[in-house]
Image (spheres, rainbow, N blue to C red):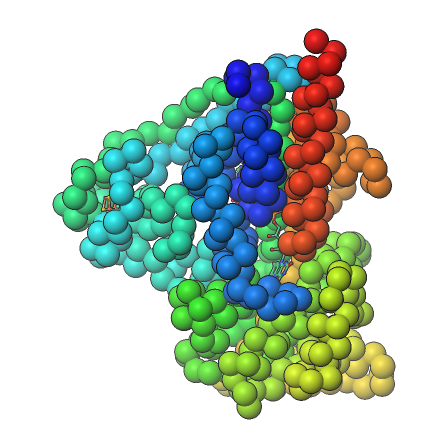
Length: 437
Ligand SMILES: Cc1cc2nc3c(=O)[nH]c(=O)nc-3n(C[C@H](O)[C@H](O)[C@H](O)COP(=O)(O)OP(=O)(O)OC[C@H]3O[C@@H](n4cnc5c(N)ncnc54)[C@H](O)[C@@H]3O)c2cc1C
Ligand code: SF4
Ligand code: SF4
């Protein structure tokens, strides 16, 4: 297969992985780029998934392994696409290979460097501040590829010019403190963008206490607490003192469906993952009290309504229909003030911990990527699709397609369907070009 048939997939979450496997199975050469050192995207951070409560890694790992081993897929992790020139069917992508300060061609993933590194730091982006990592680390023990990189902002050698313990520990001489970013160019026939989402930075929402009240966390932090392979080995612990919380409040629609102050749209997964979180919490803390504040309960997927029914009827969750007006700390408790909009009465809940289901938003760098790729963003910053109903994979630039949450919030099932659709659109695009030639 010639270079011109190569497909560039940007973003290796479940969307990018699905599209890559589909295309690779159909015989196309795929170049899969991710800005992180390992593939898997947000699913790597999840514990169990609605509506079946099966473990996220059990669904994801066979696919990451297949991606890593597929003869038609080449991984370029810890890399970013800076530009795309040329014509549909004959693009040139400029890619920055970021310097992780480790020569991955030598590294065997043995982990000796991480074990010996004396520097422990909080990882806000992966463990959401729940756990500690070393200054040289890989994302998880199951990471693919399982190669570490140095966090130069925290590494003692880069900060103070002394240490190099990892270099002495590495049996194959893979540590390379001099390594620099490199630019590479790749010829590709078509592109699928699958860069996913970020959570709304709610530190700006003072009324929710996030960032000032330590026991207020977001949904991804809750996933890390619930993960058996996570930093607390699956125990839900109060961040302020590590105690088991006996009362947890879950708040839905934080930043979503609020056109005046925040985001106008529904983030589509929060009703379901809040019910999931509350159930997982009750499975772990049997005498715990789980209270959920909601605006509406939206459950549109297959099996979702049944999941919610079971949550409300059999799992002993307390649902309060209402908005929260203020969250603050009182001693070692978190006080939640709100209004029950069914009775019109004010509600006060004394909790040990609060979990905010914050809006799904585009990655902060998505606008720059849209410019680099010559495609457009919509009013909320997600990639603009060709047509709302019949062209959700297309963009304004022929040959460039989108898949998954970078086009709009969606759950895993819909993301996978959208990604397979993108792979199929690419194949139609290539077939049309072959016929035209
Ligand atoms: C708290 C929480 C719980 C959830 N629970 C569930 C659940 O139980 N069940 C369910 O069905 N759904 C759940 N979801 C939704 C699920 O996470 C998404 O449907 C899914 O992750 C979307 O996959 P994606 O590939 O589109 O995006 P992502 O998983 O975000 O992957 C995007 C990938 O692109 C990479 N990337 C980003 N920008 C760039 C760039 N510029 N260059 C290169 N690479 C880039 C990222 O590093 C990442 O690897 C949950 C979501 C949240 C927030
Ligand atoms: S030089 Fe020292 S602090 Fe830096 S990554 Fe290596 S062992 Fe850790
Ligand atoms: S010690 Fe060397 S070979 Fe082992 S994981 Fe670290 S860099 Fe790779």
